[in-house]
Image (tube, rainbow, N blue to C red):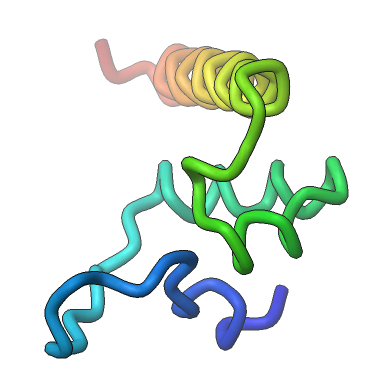
Length: 84
């Protein structure tokens, strides 16, 4: 995915200072899901608040699902390693 799109703010803030937010794993996953659903252009133009409740809910649901899958994979890996 293009890093330029990830760091592009959606809405202009009231202050002129440009603060770049450090993206967390959850933020990166949100952008990936938005891209898969074809909503990345909408997010980059209007920000996350520009999404409808249905679109935001779909992203949130998929994010939760992926986080659960990731957690389960980590637990299974720990069991296979014999630690815990």
